[in-house]
Length: 367
Image 1 (cartoon, rainbow, N blue to C red):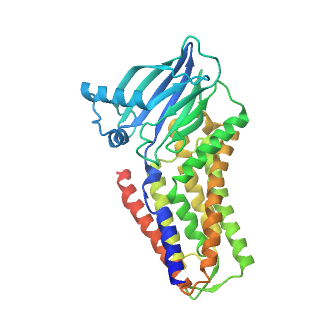
Image 2: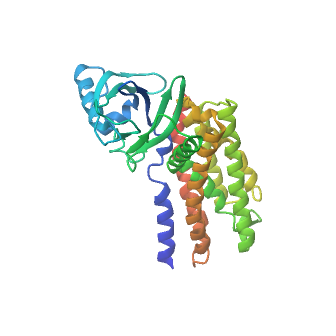
Image 3: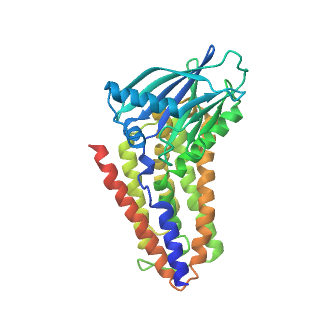
């Protein structure tokens, strides 16, 4: 049993604590535009991520630009409906600061063979993602003055089908996939919720977690906490998308890190016993602003459309519930182990340490 307890703690800790910085890791973008005889791709890759992945210097010196050109042309390809590879012509390439850290900016035009069949094309992308599993690139499609997200590519799914037009249902499904990708890397969101769920089976007595609840009451409290968090981040996600609610991302991210520490300490010793659902809703409002940042910074049509916002939110919820479906039963079963009184505070301490790391990492962003 002791070995089972140690295994449980190690699995949960290792599942979340590595790459604790992943939520703030900058990601790439590629915006596609269909043209006569081909398709153009406007590419934005964070310079720091490019240098790490390629080993090349990020500068506008001739040698550095030639190396960047070779890297991009080897990592971005377009294939026609008949699987023929389209030729690539790089017309723009530079390192520049548009907003925030420096980026690698490029434009590649892919030219279709003369005998290429009409139909959807396949974009194959391994820029940075081949070296960094948590990195992804948003794929956008520009049609006139409208730009919409059609999906994302990452190490596990490096090819995406691109069609000139897609149905509302297809756009919603793509938004759901994007939401799922986002929450998979959102360790801070998941750990905040997990810290609240740790106390669901317990009742605070004289400033300590002592009495245990029955299975039915525990399940009800779990449902209330998850629902509170879901409603909270849904409100601000929709408000940010449709109502243009905005806050600077740095204080939002810092507040999220603080929420992780606060709820983790609550799991060790009661701070707001009986009010976990209200706390989940309140901090969910802040977490929703962070979810919206990914969309707002890219100024994507998905952030201003109710159907695609719903899809993005559904993707978040699907992954969140899938993870909790595995973790929560495991945690409840672990309550029967001989050393079960140590599990809650031990997990709370691990989560609190992650939150402290995030605070230290994000605080300089306010300066």
